[in-house]
Image (cartoon, rainbow, N blue to C red; front, side, top):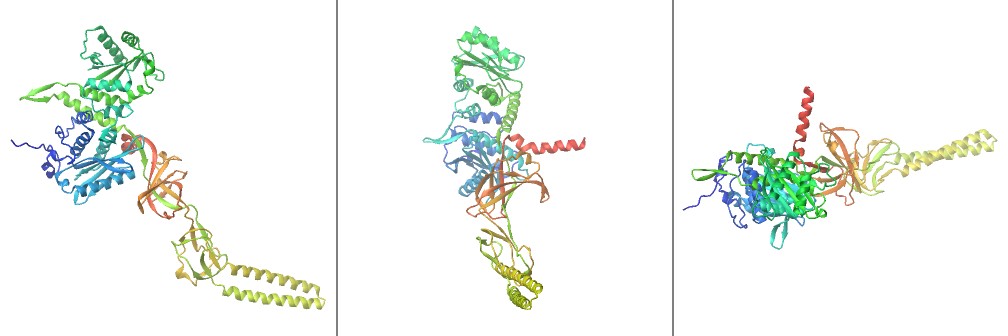
Length: 632
Protein backbone atom coordinates (compact mmCIF):
# COMPACT_ATOMS: atom_id res chain seq x y z
CA UNK A 1 0.00 0.00 0.00
CA UNK A 2 1.45 3.35 -0.99
CA UNK A 3 2.27 5.58 1.97
CA UNK A 4 0.78 9.04 1.67
CA UNK A 5 2.90 11.97 2.69
CA UNK A 6 1.43 14.46 5.15
CA UNK A 7 0.81 17.90 3.70
CA UNK A 8 0.18 21.34 5.15
CA UNK A 9 -3.42 22.23 6.03
CA UNK A 10 -5.25 24.37 3.51
CA UNK A 11 -4.64 27.88 4.83
CA UNK A 12 -4.28 31.06 2.80
CA UNK A 13 -0.90 30.01 1.44
CA UNK A 14 0.20 30.18 -2.23
CA UNK A 15 -1.03 27.19 -4.25
CA UNK A 16 2.42 25.74 -4.80
CA UNK A 17 3.01 25.49 -1.05
CA UNK A 18 0.43 22.70 -0.80
CA UNK A 19 2.40 20.60 -3.27
CA UNK A 20 5.31 20.17 -0.83
CA UNK A 21 4.97 17.09 1.42
CA UNK A 22 6.03 17.65 5.02
CA UNK A 23 8.42 14.69 4.83
CA UNK A 24 10.67 16.69 2.48
CA UNK A 25 11.33 19.32 5.15
CA UNK A 26 14.36 17.62 6.70
CA UNK A 27 18.12 17.73 6.35
CA UNK A 28 19.60 15.10 4.08
CA UNK A 29 22.49 14.55 6.50
CA UNK A 30 20.25 14.15 9.55
CA UNK A 31 18.81 10.82 10.67
CA UNK A 32 15.08 10.31 9.89
CA UNK A 33 12.75 11.48 12.62
CA UNK A 34 11.30 8.75 14.84
CA UNK A 35 7.83 10.14 14.21
CA UNK A 36 6.36 12.59 11.76
CA UNK A 37 5.55 16.01 13.09
CA UNK A 38 2.02 17.22 12.43
CA UNK A 39 1.44 20.63 10.93
CA UNK A 40 1.36 23.52 13.44
CA UNK A 41 -1.99 23.93 15.17
CA UNK A 42 -2.55 27.26 17.00
CA UNK A 43 -4.55 25.36 19.63
CA UNK A 44 -1.69 22.94 20.33
CA UNK A 45 1.41 24.99 19.57
CA UNK A 46 2.45 25.34 23.20
CA UNK A 47 1.93 21.60 23.78
CA UNK A 48 3.90 20.75 20.64
CA UNK A 49 6.79 23.03 21.58
CA UNK A 50 7.04 21.74 25.15
CA UNK A 51 6.78 18.14 23.94
CA UNK A 52 9.68 18.67 21.51
CA UNK A 53 11.88 20.37 24.13
CA UNK A 54 11.16 17.73 26.80
CA UNK A 55 11.48 14.69 24.54
CA UNK A 56 14.27 12.14 24.95
CA UNK A 57 15.50 12.55 21.38
CA UNK A 58 18.88 14.02 20.56
CA UNK A 59 19.33 17.76 20.35
CA UNK A 60 19.92 17.58 16.59
CA UNK A 61 16.50 15.99 16.10
CA UNK A 62 14.92 18.59 18.40
CA UNK A 63 16.38 21.33 16.21
CA UNK A 64 14.97 19.75 13.05
CA UNK A 65 11.52 19.32 14.62
CA UNK A 66 11.49 22.94 15.80
CA UNK A 67 12.63 24.07 12.35
CA UNK A 68 9.76 22.13 10.74
CA UNK A 69 7.38 23.72 13.22
CA UNK A 70 8.79 27.20 12.42
CA UNK A 71 8.49 26.66 8.68
CA UNK A 72 4.86 25.58 8.90
CA UNK A 73 3.95 28.34 11.35
CA UNK A 74 5.05 31.26 9.14
CA UNK A 75 4.22 29.80 5.73
CA UNK A 76 7.91 29.23 4.93
CA UNK A 77 9.77 27.08 2.44
CA UNK A 78 12.89 26.40 4.50
CA UNK A 79 14.83 27.28 7.64
CA UNK A 80 18.41 27.13 8.96
CA UNK A 81 19.61 27.50 12.56
CA UNK A 82 23.10 29.00 12.96
CA UNK A 83 25.31 29.03 16.07
CA UNK A 84 28.42 31.21 16.53
CA UNK A 85 31.39 28.84 17.01
CA UNK A 86 34.92 30.27 17.28
CA UNK A 87 33.88 33.56 15.68
CA UNK A 88 32.03 32.05 12.68
CA UNK A 89 28.38 31.08 12.14
CA UNK A 90 27.97 27.32 11.73
CA UNK A 91 24.79 25.51 10.70
CA UNK A 92 23.24 23.34 13.44
CA UNK A 93 20.34 22.13 11.32
CA UNK A 94 18.41 22.99 8.18
CA UNK A 95 15.16 22.03 6.51
CA UNK A 96 14.40 22.92 2.89
CA UNK A 97 11.48 22.31 0.56
CA UNK A 98 11.94 20.36 -2.67
CA UNK A 99 12.09 23.59 -4.68
CA UNK A 100 14.72 25.14 -2.37
CA UNK A 101 16.69 21.86 -2.16
CA UNK A 102 17.29 21.94 -5.92
CA UNK A 103 19.49 24.99 -5.31
CA UNK A 104 20.62 24.09 -1.80
CA UNK A 105 24.17 25.49 -2.15
CA UNK A 106 23.06 28.91 -3.35
CA UNK A 107 20.15 29.00 -0.87
CA UNK A 108 22.39 28.08 2.07
CA UNK A 109 24.99 30.68 1.05
CA UNK A 110 22.31 33.39 0.84
CA UNK A 111 20.89 32.34 4.24
CA UNK A 112 24.32 32.43 5.87
CA UNK A 113 25.14 35.82 4.34
CA UNK A 114 21.91 37.31 5.66
CA UNK A 115 22.49 35.70 9.09
CA UNK A 116 26.00 37.22 9.30
CA UNK A 117 24.51 40.62 8.50
CA UNK A 118 21.81 40.23 11.17
CA UNK A 119 24.31 39.14 13.87
CA UNK A 120 26.73 41.98 13.03
CA UNK A 121 23.91 44.56 13.26
CA UNK A 122 22.30 42.87 16.31
CA UNK A 123 18.82 43.16 14.79
CA UNK A 124 16.51 41.24 12.49
CA UNK A 125 17.39 41.40 8.80
CA UNK A 126 15.12 40.81 5.78
CA UNK A 127 16.79 39.99 2.46
CA UNK A 128 15.81 38.54 -0.89
CA UNK A 129 16.60 35.07 -2.22
CA UNK A 130 18.43 35.08 -5.59
CA UNK A 131 16.41 33.34 -8.28
CA UNK A 132 13.21 33.33 -6.18
CA UNK A 133 11.87 36.91 -6.03
CA UNK A 134 8.75 35.87 -4.09
CA UNK A 135 10.80 34.33 -1.27
CA UNK A 136 12.36 36.52 1.44
CA UNK A 137 15.14 35.60 3.86
CA UNK A 138 14.34 36.56 7.46
CA UNK A 139 17.22 36.28 9.96
CA UNK A 140 16.56 36.79 13.69
CA UNK A 141 19.70 36.94 15.88
CA UNK A 142 19.77 36.27 19.64
CA UNK A 143 22.61 37.18 22.00
CA UNK A 144 22.89 35.11 25.16
CA UNK A 145 22.67 36.79 28.56
CA UNK A 146 26.36 36.06 29.15
CA UNK A 147 27.16 37.77 25.79
CA UNK A 148 29.40 34.84 24.90
CA UNK A 149 27.63 33.08 22.04
CA UNK A 150 25.30 34.33 19.32
CA UNK A 151 22.73 32.33 17.40
CA UNK A 152 20.49 33.15 14.48
CA UNK A 153 17.28 31.60 13.16
CA UNK A 154 16.98 32.11 9.39
CA UNK A 155 13.70 31.25 7.65
CA UNK A 156 12.69 31.48 4.00
CA UNK A 157 9.25 33.16 4.04
CA UNK A 158 6.70 33.96 1.35
CA UNK A 159 5.10 37.19 2.55
CA UNK A 160 2.81 37.71 -0.42
CA UNK A 161 0.55 40.66 0.37
CA UNK A 162 0.82 40.10 4.12
CA UNK A 163 2.69 42.61 6.33
CA UNK A 164 6.16 41.60 7.55
CA UNK A 165 5.88 42.78 11.15
CA UNK A 166 3.84 39.83 12.58
CA UNK A 167 6.24 37.36 10.95
CA UNK A 168 9.23 39.18 12.46
CA UNK A 169 7.71 39.11 15.96
CA UNK A 170 6.86 35.37 15.73
CA UNK A 171 10.27 34.40 14.34
CA UNK A 172 12.15 36.42 16.97
CA UNK A 173 10.18 34.69 19.73
CA UNK A 174 11.01 31.32 18.14
CA UNK A 175 14.65 32.35 17.88
CA UNK A 176 14.69 32.78 21.68
CA UNK A 177 13.46 29.17 22.03
CA UNK A 178 16.36 27.97 19.85
CA UNK A 179 18.87 30.10 21.78
CA UNK A 180 17.68 28.73 25.16
CA UNK A 181 18.62 25.19 24.06
CA UNK A 182 22.28 26.29 24.52
CA UNK A 183 23.76 24.08 21.78
CA UNK A 184 27.46 23.25 22.25
CA UNK A 185 29.94 21.09 20.38
CA UNK A 186 31.23 17.92 22.07
CA UNK A 187 33.30 14.95 20.85
CA UNK A 188 30.05 13.08 20.21
CA UNK A 189 28.60 15.89 18.09
CA UNK A 190 25.92 18.32 19.16
CA UNK A 191 24.78 17.88 22.73
CA UNK A 192 22.47 19.71 25.09
CA UNK A 193 23.86 21.48 28.14
CA UNK A 194 21.59 22.13 31.13
CA UNK A 195 21.61 25.79 32.05
CA UNK A 196 22.45 26.94 35.54
CA UNK A 197 19.11 28.76 35.94
CA UNK A 198 15.82 26.91 36.45
CA UNK A 199 14.04 28.04 33.22
CA UNK A 200 17.01 26.89 31.15
CA UNK A 201 17.17 23.62 33.11
CA UNK A 202 13.48 22.88 32.40
CA UNK A 203 13.79 23.71 28.70
CA UNK A 204 17.05 21.84 28.08
CA UNK A 205 16.36 18.66 30.11
CA UNK A 206 15.73 15.91 27.59
CA UNK A 207 14.35 13.26 29.96
CA UNK A 208 11.08 14.86 31.11
CA UNK A 209 8.21 12.65 30.01
CA UNK A 210 5.91 12.59 33.09
CA UNK A 211 5.44 14.17 36.52
CA UNK A 212 7.92 11.77 38.13
CA UNK A 213 10.75 12.63 35.69
CA UNK A 214 10.00 16.33 36.13
CA UNK A 215 10.18 15.82 39.89
CA UNK A 216 13.59 14.19 39.54
CA UNK A 217 14.88 17.22 37.60
CA UNK A 218 13.53 19.65 40.21
CA UNK A 219 14.88 17.49 43.01
CA UNK A 220 18.35 17.45 41.47
CA UNK A 221 18.24 21.20 40.84
CA UNK A 222 17.11 22.11 44.38
CA UNK A 223 19.18 19.52 46.22
CA UNK A 224 16.17 18.55 48.36
CA UNK A 225 15.70 15.12 49.91
CA UNK A 226 11.92 14.84 49.31
CA UNK A 227 9.78 16.42 46.63
CA UNK A 228 5.98 16.33 46.19
CA UNK A 229 3.49 17.83 43.74
CA UNK A 230 -0.24 18.42 44.01
CA UNK A 231 -2.89 19.98 41.82
CA UNK A 232 -6.10 21.92 42.20
CA UNK A 233 -8.83 22.61 39.65
CA UNK A 234 -10.29 25.40 41.77
CA UNK A 235 -12.57 25.46 44.79
CA UNK A 236 -9.79 24.84 47.33
CA UNK A 237 -9.59 21.03 46.88
CA UNK A 238 -6.08 19.67 46.38
CA UNK A 239 -5.14 16.28 45.02
CA UNK A 240 -1.73 14.78 45.79
CA UNK A 241 -0.23 13.60 42.50
CA UNK A 242 3.37 12.56 43.11
CA UNK A 243 5.94 12.07 45.91
CA UNK A 244 9.59 11.34 45.27
CA UNK A 245 10.73 7.74 45.97
CA UNK A 246 7.06 6.64 46.12
CA UNK A 247 5.86 4.46 43.23
CA UNK A 248 2.15 4.95 43.91
CA UNK A 249 0.64 7.63 46.10
CA UNK A 250 -1.85 6.36 48.71
CA UNK A 251 -4.10 9.25 49.69
CA UNK A 252 -5.36 7.37 52.80
CA UNK A 253 -2.09 7.45 54.77
CA UNK A 254 -1.49 10.05 57.49
CA UNK A 255 1.57 11.44 55.69
CA UNK A 256 -0.39 11.94 52.45
CA UNK A 257 -3.16 13.72 54.34
CA UNK A 258 -0.54 15.97 55.94
CA UNK A 259 0.85 16.83 52.49
CA UNK A 260 -2.66 17.73 51.32
CA UNK A 261 -3.30 19.92 54.42
CA UNK A 262 -0.07 21.84 53.80
CA UNK A 263 -0.96 22.37 50.14
CA UNK A 264 -4.52 23.48 50.90
CA UNK A 265 -3.25 25.96 53.50
CA UNK A 266 -0.72 27.43 51.06
CA UNK A 267 -3.36 27.58 48.31
CA UNK A 268 -5.69 29.58 50.57
CA UNK A 269 -2.90 31.98 51.62
CA UNK A 270 -1.81 32.39 48.02
CA UNK A 271 1.86 32.84 48.86
CA UNK A 272 5.03 30.86 49.36
CA UNK A 273 5.23 29.25 52.83
CA UNK A 274 8.25 27.77 54.59
CA UNK A 275 9.52 26.55 57.94
CA UNK A 276 11.84 27.81 59.33
CA UNK A 277 11.24 31.23 57.72
CA UNK A 278 13.67 32.04 54.92
CA UNK A 279 15.63 35.27 55.35
CA UNK A 280 15.52 37.86 52.59
CA UNK A 281 11.97 37.14 51.33
CA UNK A 282 9.21 39.27 52.87
CA UNK A 283 6.51 37.35 51.00
CA UNK A 284 7.56 34.07 52.61
CA UNK A 285 5.30 33.03 55.49
CA UNK A 286 6.07 30.61 58.32
CA UNK A 287 3.50 27.81 58.66
CA UNK A 288 2.94 25.44 61.59
CA UNK A 289 1.62 22.83 59.15
CA UNK A 290 4.91 22.97 57.21
CA UNK A 291 6.69 22.61 60.56
CA UNK A 292 4.60 19.52 61.36
CA UNK A 293 5.41 18.05 57.92
CA UNK A 294 9.14 18.75 58.34
CA UNK A 295 9.20 17.08 61.75
CA UNK A 296 7.10 14.12 60.55
CA UNK A 297 9.56 13.41 57.70
CA UNK A 298 12.69 13.99 59.81
CA UNK A 299 13.85 16.94 57.71
CA UNK A 300 15.27 20.34 58.69
CA UNK A 301 13.84 22.77 56.12
CA UNK A 302 10.50 22.81 54.26
CA UNK A 303 9.06 24.94 51.49
CA UNK A 304 5.71 24.96 49.66
CA UNK A 305 4.99 27.15 46.64
CA UNK A 306 1.95 27.72 44.37
CA UNK A 307 2.56 27.49 40.60
CA UNK A 308 -0.29 28.94 38.47
CA UNK A 309 -1.47 26.99 35.45
CA UNK A 310 -4.05 27.95 32.83
CA UNK A 311 -7.87 27.90 32.91
CA UNK A 312 -7.96 28.38 36.71
CA UNK A 313 -5.77 25.38 37.48
CA UNK A 314 -2.98 25.55 40.08
CA UNK A 315 -0.13 23.28 41.12
CA UNK A 316 1.58 23.08 44.52
CA UNK A 317 5.19 22.02 44.98
CA UNK A 318 6.68 20.87 48.30
CA UNK A 319 10.46 20.75 48.86
CA UNK A 320 11.96 19.17 52.00
CA UNK A 321 15.69 19.43 52.78
CA UNK A 322 17.58 17.26 55.25
CA UNK A 323 19.78 20.24 56.13
CA UNK A 324 18.95 23.94 56.08
CA UNK A 325 22.44 24.67 54.71
CA UNK A 326 21.57 22.74 51.53
CA UNK A 327 19.16 25.43 50.33
CA UNK A 328 20.99 27.37 47.65
CA UNK A 329 20.93 31.13 47.59
CA UNK A 330 18.47 32.57 45.08
CA UNK A 331 16.44 29.38 44.54
CA UNK A 332 13.21 30.98 45.75
CA UNK A 333 13.67 33.79 43.22
CA UNK A 334 14.34 31.18 40.54
CA UNK A 335 11.05 29.45 41.42
CA UNK A 336 9.16 32.72 40.95
CA UNK A 337 10.93 33.36 37.67
CA UNK A 338 10.27 29.87 36.28
CA UNK A 339 6.66 29.66 37.49
CA UNK A 340 5.03 30.26 34.02
CA UNK A 341 7.21 27.65 32.30
CA UNK A 342 6.82 25.25 35.22
CA UNK A 343 3.03 25.58 35.26
CA UNK A 344 2.85 25.04 31.51
CA UNK A 345 5.01 21.91 31.72
CA UNK A 346 3.07 20.47 34.68
CA UNK A 347 -0.21 20.93 32.85
CA UNK A 348 1.12 19.44 29.59
CA UNK A 349 2.46 16.35 31.42
CA UNK A 350 -0.92 15.54 32.95
CA UNK A 351 -3.08 12.94 31.20
CA UNK A 352 -6.08 14.59 29.55
CA UNK A 353 -9.29 12.65 28.83
CA UNK A 354 -10.30 12.02 25.25
CA UNK A 355 -13.56 10.97 23.58
CA UNK A 356 -13.76 8.17 21.00
CA UNK A 357 -15.46 9.21 17.77
CA UNK A 358 -15.77 6.61 15.02
CA UNK A 359 -13.00 4.58 16.56
CA UNK A 360 -10.57 7.50 16.69
CA UNK A 361 -9.32 9.31 19.79
CA UNK A 362 -10.28 12.98 19.66
CA UNK A 363 -9.27 15.61 22.21
CA UNK A 364 -12.07 17.16 24.20
CA UNK A 365 -13.08 20.79 23.55
CA UNK A 366 -11.69 21.72 26.94
CA UNK A 367 -8.28 20.38 25.94
CA UNK A 368 -8.35 22.57 22.83
CA UNK A 369 -9.08 25.62 24.97
CA UNK A 370 -6.27 24.62 27.30
CA UNK A 371 -3.90 24.32 24.34
CA UNK A 372 -4.93 27.75 23.05
CA UNK A 373 -4.47 29.25 26.51
CA UNK A 374 -1.11 27.49 26.72
CA UNK A 375 -0.09 29.16 23.46
CA UNK A 376 -1.06 32.53 24.87
CA UNK A 377 0.95 31.86 28.04
CA UNK A 378 3.87 30.61 25.96
CA UNK A 379 3.94 33.76 23.80
CA UNK A 380 3.39 35.99 26.82
CA UNK A 381 6.31 34.32 28.60
CA UNK A 382 8.72 34.95 25.76
CA UNK A 383 7.37 38.45 25.17
CA UNK A 384 8.54 39.24 28.73
CA UNK A 385 11.95 37.69 28.15
CA UNK A 386 14.61 40.39 28.79
CA UNK A 387 16.98 41.01 25.89
CA UNK A 388 19.52 43.77 25.22
CA UNK A 389 17.80 46.94 24.01
CA UNK A 390 19.79 48.91 21.45
CA UNK A 391 19.13 52.14 19.60
CA UNK A 392 20.22 52.39 15.96
CA UNK A 393 20.68 56.07 15.04
CA UNK A 394 22.52 57.34 11.97
CA UNK A 395 26.07 58.56 12.54
CA UNK A 396 28.61 60.74 10.75
CA UNK A 397 32.38 61.31 10.97
CA UNK A 398 33.37 64.90 11.78
CA UNK A 399 36.82 66.29 12.61
CA UNK A 400 37.73 67.00 16.21
CA UNK A 401 38.96 70.47 15.20
CA UNK A 402 39.20 72.51 11.97
CA UNK A 403 42.17 74.79 11.17
CA UNK A 404 41.58 77.77 8.88
CA UNK A 405 44.32 79.22 6.64
CA UNK A 406 43.92 82.88 5.55
CA UNK A 407 46.34 85.59 4.26
CA UNK A 408 47.44 88.32 6.67
CA UNK A 409 47.35 91.09 4.05
CA UNK A 410 45.71 91.89 0.73
CA UNK A 411 47.34 90.51 -2.39
CA UNK A 412 47.10 88.43 -5.53
CA UNK A 413 46.92 84.59 -5.50
CA UNK A 414 49.88 83.54 -7.63
CA UNK A 415 50.03 79.71 -7.22
CA UNK A 416 47.93 76.97 -5.53
CA UNK A 417 49.66 73.67 -4.62
CA UNK A 418 46.85 71.54 -3.06
CA UNK A 419 43.18 70.74 -3.52
CA UNK A 420 40.44 69.25 -1.26
CA UNK A 421 41.15 65.67 -0.22
CA UNK A 422 44.95 66.01 -0.24
CA UNK A 423 46.77 64.79 2.86
CA UNK A 424 49.42 67.19 4.11
CA UNK A 425 51.93 67.40 6.91
CA UNK A 426 52.86 70.44 9.01
CA UNK A 427 54.78 73.00 6.92
CA UNK A 428 53.56 71.76 3.53
CA UNK A 429 53.10 74.75 1.11
CA UNK A 430 49.42 75.27 0.31
CA UNK A 431 49.52 78.41 -1.85
CA UNK A 432 51.72 81.41 -2.70
CA UNK A 433 50.84 85.10 -3.09
CA UNK A 434 52.29 87.45 -5.73
CA UNK A 435 55.24 89.41 -4.21
CA UNK A 436 56.18 91.76 -7.09
CA UNK A 437 54.18 94.69 -5.77
CA UNK A 438 55.74 94.23 -2.32
CA UNK A 439 59.23 94.21 -3.85
CA UNK A 440 58.60 97.48 -5.71
CA UNK A 441 57.15 99.11 -2.62
CA UNK A 442 60.11 97.91 -0.54
CA UNK A 443 62.63 99.45 -2.96
CA UNK A 444 60.68 102.73 -2.92
CA UNK A 445 60.68 102.77 0.88
CA UNK A 446 64.41 102.05 0.97
CA UNK A 447 65.06 104.99 -1.42
CA UNK A 448 62.91 107.32 0.67
CA UNK A 449 64.74 106.13 3.77
CA UNK A 450 68.14 107.00 2.26
CA UNK A 451 66.77 110.40 1.21
CA UNK A 452 65.49 111.15 4.70
CA UNK A 453 68.84 110.22 6.22
CA UNK A 454 70.68 112.55 3.78
CA UNK A 455 68.37 115.47 4.60
CA UNK A 456 68.99 114.90 8.30
CA UNK A 457 72.73 115.20 7.74
CA UNK A 458 72.28 118.48 5.81
CA UNK A 459 70.13 119.94 8.59
CA UNK A 460 72.80 119.08 11.14
CA UNK A 461 75.54 120.76 9.06
CA UNK A 462 73.45 123.96 8.79
CA UNK A 463 72.70 123.85 12.53
CA UNK A 464 68.95 123.30 12.08
CA UNK A 465 68.48 120.86 14.95
CA UNK A 466 64.68 120.74 14.83
CA UNK A 467 64.55 119.84 11.15
CA UNK A 468 67.30 117.28 11.68
CA UNK A 469 65.23 115.65 14.43
CA UNK A 470 62.19 115.49 12.14
CA UNK A 471 64.30 113.95 9.40
CA UNK A 472 65.54 111.29 11.84
CA UNK A 473 61.98 110.37 12.83
CA UNK A 474 60.99 110.11 9.15
CA UNK A 475 63.96 107.83 8.54
CA UNK A 476 62.91 105.56 11.44
CA UNK A 477 59.31 105.43 10.15
CA UNK A 478 60.52 104.35 6.75
CA UNK A 479 62.74 101.69 8.32
CA UNK A 480 59.76 100.20 10.20
CA UNK A 481 57.71 100.21 7.02
CA UNK A 482 60.51 98.39 5.21
CA UNK A 483 60.64 95.86 8.05
CA UNK A 484 56.88 95.24 7.68
CA UNK A 485 57.25 94.77 3.92
CA UNK A 486 60.08 92.27 4.37
CA UNK A 487 57.97 90.35 6.91
CA UNK A 488 55.12 90.21 4.37
CA UNK A 489 57.57 88.90 1.78
CA UNK A 490 58.33 86.03 4.18
CA UNK A 491 54.58 85.33 4.52
CA UNK A 492 53.84 85.17 0.82
CA UNK A 493 53.83 81.35 1.06
CA UNK A 494 50.89 79.86 3.03
CA UNK A 495 51.90 76.63 4.83
CA UNK A 496 49.86 73.91 6.59
CA UNK A 497 49.71 74.44 10.39
CA UNK A 498 48.92 70.73 11.17
CA UNK A 499 49.14 67.19 9.85
CA UNK A 500 45.81 66.31 8.30
CA UNK A 501 43.58 66.53 5.25
CA UNK A 502 42.42 69.50 3.17
CA UNK A 503 38.66 69.81 3.64
CA UNK A 504 38.02 72.83 1.41
CA UNK A 505 40.01 75.20 -0.79
CA UNK A 506 39.52 74.36 -4.47
CA UNK A 507 41.37 77.42 -5.81
CA UNK A 508 43.19 75.96 -8.81
CA UNK A 509 41.00 78.00 -11.16
CA UNK A 510 41.30 81.15 -9.03
CA UNK A 511 45.06 81.75 -9.55
CA UNK A 512 45.72 85.42 -10.26
CA UNK A 513 42.61 86.63 -8.48
CA UNK A 514 42.85 89.09 -5.58
CA UNK A 515 42.47 87.92 -2.00
CA UNK A 516 41.81 90.04 1.04
CA UNK A 517 43.15 89.99 4.55
CA UNK A 518 41.40 87.35 6.73
CA UNK A 519 39.71 85.62 3.79
CA UNK A 520 39.57 81.82 4.49
CA UNK A 521 41.34 80.04 1.65
CA UNK A 522 41.76 76.54 3.11
CA UNK A 523 40.19 74.38 5.84
CA UNK A 524 42.35 71.59 7.29
CA UNK A 525 41.54 68.93 9.87
CA UNK A 526 43.81 66.44 11.68
CA UNK A 527 42.84 62.75 11.26
CA UNK A 528 44.69 61.03 14.12
CA UNK A 529 41.54 61.51 16.22
CA UNK A 530 38.06 61.99 14.80
CA UNK A 531 34.62 62.64 16.28
CA UNK A 532 31.59 60.41 15.72
CA UNK A 533 28.27 62.28 15.89
CA UNK A 534 25.02 60.30 16.37
CA UNK A 535 21.63 61.80 15.50
CA UNK A 536 19.35 60.41 18.25
CA UNK A 537 15.63 61.15 17.92
CA UNK A 538 14.18 63.13 20.79
CA UNK A 539 11.81 60.22 21.55
CA UNK A 540 14.84 57.97 22.27
CA UNK A 541 17.23 60.40 23.97
CA UNK A 542 15.96 59.35 27.43
CA UNK A 543 17.52 55.90 26.85
CA UNK A 544 21.02 57.29 26.15
CA UNK A 545 23.49 57.84 28.98
CA UNK A 546 27.15 58.78 29.12
CA UNK A 547 29.66 55.91 29.15
CA UNK A 548 27.19 53.65 27.30
CA UNK A 549 28.88 51.36 24.78
CA UNK A 550 28.48 52.21 21.09
CA UNK A 551 29.17 50.11 17.99
CA UNK A 552 29.44 51.95 14.67
CA UNK A 553 29.37 50.57 11.12
CA UNK A 554 30.13 52.66 8.06
CA UNK A 555 28.88 52.16 4.52
CA UNK A 556 32.45 52.42 3.20
CA UNK A 557 33.59 49.45 5.38
CA UNK A 558 30.65 46.99 5.58
CA UNK A 559 32.70 44.21 7.15
CA UNK A 560 34.22 46.23 9.99
CA UNK A 561 32.98 47.95 13.12
CA UNK A 562 34.39 50.41 15.64
CA UNK A 563 33.64 50.56 19.37
CA UNK A 564 33.50 53.48 21.74
CA UNK A 565 31.53 55.03 24.60
CA UNK A 566 29.26 58.07 24.73
CA UNK A 567 31.30 61.15 25.72
CA UNK A 568 28.89 64.05 25.26
CA UNK A 569 25.15 64.55 24.83
CA UNK A 570 24.04 67.85 23.34
CA UNK A 571 21.82 69.77 25.81
CA UNK A 572 19.85 71.27 22.93
CA UNK A 573 18.07 69.58 20.04
CA UNK A 574 18.51 70.50 16.40
CA UNK A 575 16.61 69.95 13.16
CA UNK A 576 18.15 67.39 10.80
CA UNK A 577 16.35 66.27 7.63
CA UNK A 578 13.07 67.57 9.05
CA UNK A 579 13.44 65.58 12.30
CA UNK A 580 14.11 66.88 15.79
CA UNK A 581 17.29 65.14 17.03
CA UNK A 582 19.93 65.38 19.75
CA UNK A 583 23.60 65.14 18.77
CA UNK A 584 25.46 62.48 20.76
CA UNK A 585 29.21 62.31 20.18
CA UNK A 586 32.33 60.43 21.19
CA UNK A 587 35.97 60.57 20.13
CA UNK A 588 37.56 57.69 18.22
CA UNK A 589 41.17 56.84 17.50
CA UNK A 590 41.92 57.01 13.75
CA UNK A 591 45.66 56.38 13.67
CA UNK A 592 45.25 54.21 10.55
CA UNK A 593 43.53 57.16 8.75
CA UNK A 594 40.72 54.93 7.45
CA UNK A 595 37.86 57.18 8.51
CA UNK A 596 37.46 60.52 6.77
CA UNK A 597 35.20 63.46 7.63
CA UNK A 598 31.77 63.18 6.07
CA UNK A 599 31.52 59.36 6.12
CA UNK A 600 28.06 58.13 7.11
CA UNK A 601 26.98 54.92 8.78
CA UNK A 602 24.79 53.45 11.49
CA UNK A 603 25.43 53.13 15.21
CA UNK A 604 24.21 50.67 17.81
CA UNK A 605 23.88 52.20 21.29
CA UNK A 606 23.41 49.84 24.24
CA UNK A 607 20.52 50.96 26.43
CA UNK A 608 20.17 48.21 29.05
CA UNK A 609 17.85 45.20 28.92
CA UNK A 610 14.14 45.30 28.12
CA UNK A 611 11.45 42.75 27.44
CA UNK A 612 10.52 41.88 23.86
CA UNK A 613 7.01 43.18 24.52
CA UNK A 614 8.34 46.60 25.55
CA UNK A 615 10.83 46.80 22.68
CA UNK A 616 8.24 46.23 19.96
CA UNK A 617 5.21 47.96 21.44
CA UNK A 618 6.40 50.86 23.62
CA UNK A 619 6.32 53.38 20.75
CA UNK A 620 2.75 52.51 19.63
CA UNK A 621 1.68 52.62 23.29
CA UNK A 622 3.21 56.09 23.82
CA UNK A 623 1.59 57.28 20.57
CA UNK A 624 -1.78 56.01 21.80
CA UNK A 625 -1.32 57.76 25.16
CA UNK A 626 -0.47 61.04 23.41
CA UNK A 627 -3.54 60.65 21.21
CA UNK A 628 -5.82 60.19 24.24
CA UNK A 629 -4.20 63.15 26.00
CA UNK A 630 -4.81 65.35 22.97
CA UNK A 631 -8.46 64.29 22.82
CA UNK A 632 -9.20 64.78 26.52
